[in-house]
Amino acid sequence: MDSRKETLKKIKSLLRFHKKGLTITDIAEKLHLNRNSTAKYLEILLISGDVDLNAIGPAKLYTLSQKMPVSAMLKFAADIILLIDNEMHVLDANENALQILGTTREDLIGVRIQDIESPLIGRLSFPDVFEEIRTKGEIHREFKISLQNEDRHFRMRLIPTIFDNMDEGVTIIGEDITKQIQFEESLMISEMRYRAIVEDQIEFICRFTPKGIITFVNDAYCRYFGLQKDLILGNHHPLTLPEEDARLMKHHLASLTLENPSGTIEHRVIMPDGSVRWQFWTDHACFDANGNITEYQSVGMDTTEKQEQARKIRESEERYRMITEFSPFPISLNDRAGNFQYLNKRFIQVFGYTLADIPTELDWFSIAFPDRKERMNAIRAWKKGRGHEEQCEGKPLIFPVRCKNGTLRQIHFCPITLFNGEQFVVYEDFTDKTESERLRSVLASIVNTSDDAIDLYQSLKSSSDAR
Image 1: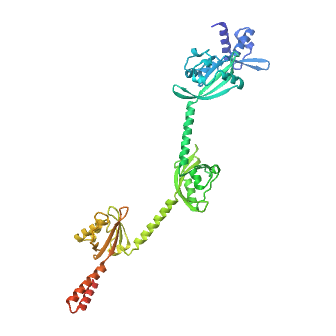
Image 2: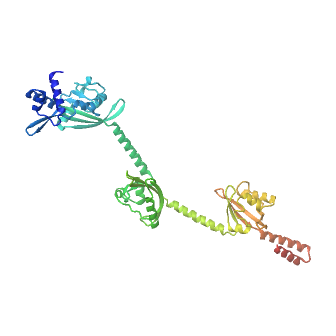
Image 3: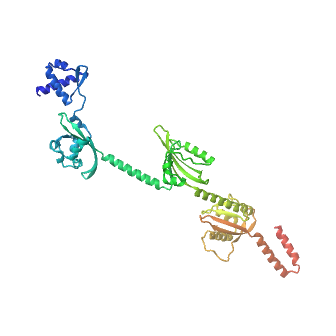
C-alpha cells in the first residue's frame, strides 16, 4: 500500500473515533502531518464521499461520512442498476442487472449501451432516450418483454446523474414487477368473475353497515325494489316491515356474533305499492380485528309464491281433516307399509276399534274378520285397492265385519291408493239394508206357504228387532 492510501486510511480511522468531528489542525497534530497536506487529503476524501464537512462558525469540522458508497449500493440493491456515462458507456452494473442481461461484468463494463443485445435494453430506445432525459429530466418506462420463453414485466427509471468525478451520465434503475402484475391481473379476473356471478344471480345481494348504509347491491336487488344503483349506494334503504316482523329482524341481526356470524330469517315486507311480499334472507356479519361488526352481507329471495302454496296446502289439509273427521262414513288412512295412520270418529263409532287396537292392517284383518274364508276375500279386495290384482267384475266388496262389541256388520269398503302410496279407505255400513232385504225374502216365502202370513211376519220382525 503506498503512503497516500495509508494516510487516507489513517485519517478515516481517526475520524471514526471522533464522532463530533475534527478540524484540519486537529488531524494534522494527531497524525503528525503537514497542515497543507492534511487539507489536500481531506479534499480527496470529501470528493469521494468518505467524509463530510460541517461549518460551525469560522471552524470547519470534518466527520466520517455515513453515506453508503455507490459500489456497496450496487452490491446490495434488489433492483436492476446500471451506471451509464455521458458517452453511453456502461460504467458499472449490479448482479441483478448482469443476470437479466445474461452477461458478466468484464464483458459489460465499457460497452456502449446501445450495443448490448437484450430485449430489456432494446425497449429503452437508446440513444434517443438520452435526448429525452436531457430535455425532461428523469423519465419512467413500464413494459413487458419475453425472457427465456417467459413474459416478464419491468418498471424502469432513467435518472440524470453526476458521478464522483463530476462527469454526467444516467443511472438506470429497474424493478421486476412480474409477480405484482400477475397478482393484479388474477385479482382483476377474480373480481370480474365475482361481479359476473353476483350480477347474474336471481337472488338479491346487498351489503350494509350496522347503521344501515348500503355499500353494495346487485342488479336483482335493484330490479326487485325499483331502485337505481348509483342513487342507493352510500345511502339508507329503509324497508317497511310489519311490526311483528320488524321485531324478529332486530332480534335476528342481534343474534349474529363472532362465534355464530351467519343466520337465516323469513319475514314479510310491505312494498311501495302497499302489497305484502315474503322474503327469505341469509345474513352474514363481518367483523374487524376488535370483534366489532363492520358490515352485513345478505342474500335473499322472494318466497311469496312458496308461502301462498303453503297456505293453500294448509287450507286443503284443514278441509280434508274437516271432511274426514265429520264424514257420515267410517274412514281410515294407511301408509305404504300397512300401518294405520288415521281413523275418523265415525270409524270408531261404528267398529269400536282405535289405533291402539288395530295399529296395522294385519291386526285389523285378524280381529275384524274371524272367519278365515271371509278374511282371505277381504284381503284380496283390500289388495285390489293397492293395485296388486286386476279388479274382478261382479263381486261386491261387502263383508261381515266383527265389531269390538262382538256384533257383525255388513260393510262395503272402497280402498283407494293415493299418489304417495298411502291407502285411503271409505267404509259403508250395509247392515240395515241387508236385513231389510232378508225380511222381504222371508215375507215372500211366508205368503206363499202360510194362511196366517201377517201374524207370522209380525212375529218374525219382532224377534229380529229384539236382536
